[in-house]
Length: 263
Image 1: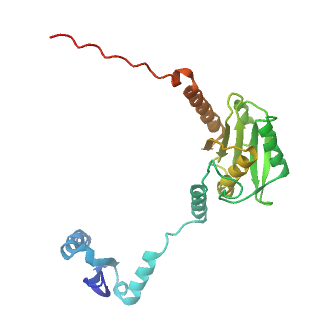
Image 2: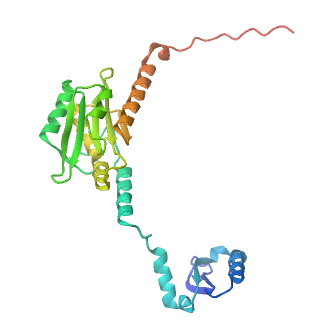
């Protein structure tokens, strides 16, 4: 055990480092005995007194230089491959790029990929009812949001309109509903860089769309496939219809309890 010069608090006891030296050449039985008795020893001495534990297999590990290497290694981040780093960046982007109903051009978070003239015109047509479906894609070269497809179609026709292997932003208005729907479609097999761009820009895209349409988009989905969006939006429409039906709004009449029988 090694006592440091620092204290647990101003008036408290010194901080200690617990060092366990078990050479690689030691017998397996001895290694097991030391490993099993370590917890008992530190508890008897007081776990709160030990700020660190050093497991040494050579005498060099017990030197000051070896201790510094141990401290440096303890504070180092876990090594990640390039793909793991990209995946972590995607996860961070998706968790911080919040979609807010009241988002607008001035305060929507995320990366701002400007809409092209074709994309802006499509949203105006969506607003006046000329079309009811828009699909957007990101162009990383020009850093713009391009119009991928626009049409007046049924919900079931959407899967045939876009690439199932690439991420897309979808806006749709059902004929039987006045609500707009937004979907961020991110297929698992798409490139990591594409997912990062879409995840980072989705909040801005929703804010721009709401500003053009002049209202908030209530139905928002994040799905792996277009078919998943179709089924999810169908369920959403059914729930809205059921809530708005007269039977759902009608309160049950008060039922007078039965008179108790005589004994």
